[in-house]
Structure formats: C-alpha cells, structure tokens
Length: 113
Length: 112
Image 1 (tube, rainbow over the protein chains, first blue to last red):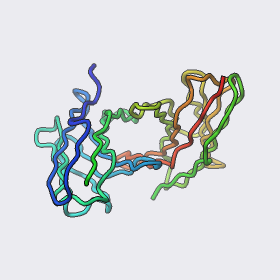
Image 2 (image 1 turned 90 degrees about the vertical axis):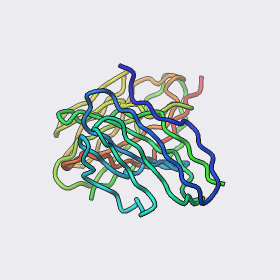
Image 3 (image 1 turned 60 degrees about the vertical axis):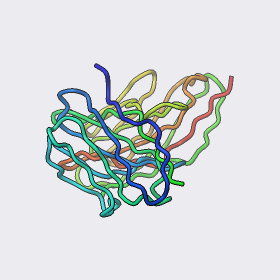
Image 4 (image 1 turned 90 degrees about the horizontal axis):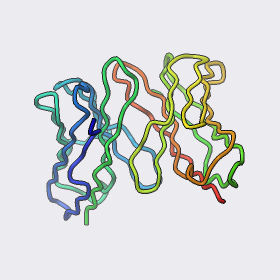
C-alpha cells in the first residue's frame, strides 16, 4: 500500500500560465476528491469523482479549473490562466464507496508569482 | 449544507495535561464525523471517526463521541505528549458524495 501520491509536490508559476497536477489514489479506491487549503484554513472541497465520472463540483471551482479521471484511476487538475489567488495547497484524497474514510495525499503546493 | 465550528487555537498545554477540543456541526441528516490531524510538515491523517449517533471513535489515546442531541464531536485525550503537537481538524462528511467539510483547525502545542 503506497498511499495516495501527488505530483509535483511544489509548483511555482507566473500569473497567466497554465498548470496541471496529478493524483494517484490508493489502488482499488473508486472515489477521488480534490480539496484546496490556504494558509491557516481547513481544506475546502473542490470536486469529486466516482470511477471516471465527475459527480460534483464546488462553486469554488471557476471555469479556469478542470479535472479529469479518464480511466477511473489517476486524476489531473488543471488551472488555466493562473492568478495569485490560486496560490494554495491542492490536496487529493481517495476512498472506497463502502467506506467512509478518505485518505489524503501530501498535496501540491502552488505559488503564483 | 453542512458546516462545522471548532474552538480556536492555539491551545497550549503541558505534557500529561487533559485535552479537549470542541467541535459542533450543522448538517442535513446524520453525517459521518471525523477528526483529522496534520503534524508539522506532513499531510492530513485520519485520527478517528464515528458513523452514527452515540458511536465513540478512538485512536492513539484520543476519543470523540458522536452526540446527535448536541450536534457535537468533541476530541479528548487524557494525557497529551509533546508528539501530539499538531493541527487538529473536525470534519463532518455526508450525502451521496461524502465530501468533507473542514473547520478552521485547532493548533495544539504541548510543552515538556
């Protein structure tokens, strides 16, 4: 069991650039979540996948954000035309349908300059 | 939607002191309830959970009881250690997606 992994761990980008993050969930976990955490705050839900289907998106997720999980395994989160307000830790979590526990990855820290 | 209120930190205690971190929630229906912990420089780890009223979750000496009547899930530990220093998050989850709603977190600092 390798746990949830995320890449890259850190990303520094200039405002206006596009960035893409990857999440590899625990194998056989069919549920996958993305959250965002800013300094001093708790994580906020962004979006949820069951297998390859994206079933819920937060209103926090503007049109510049898109997420995919093409084969129901790994997921990507893309941010287009980044803004300084996008600077945060982006967290991925996974779980079984039959279980309530979500297991988190180490996160990708995004800094937009 | 669901929401959660945690006691504000930082909470500073001496080693072996008793710990309580208060957590209350509002929710539609009966959510599952979780405490997560974030140690310095590390990711979020599940500490304990309770999935129905009157359930008690426990792990590493920490306990919390699902109180439906008071919509609370307070975290307790009888004797804290320096290694318990971390940020603690209360989070109800629920609905079809079981997305988690996190509080702002409570920083616990345990001094030797």
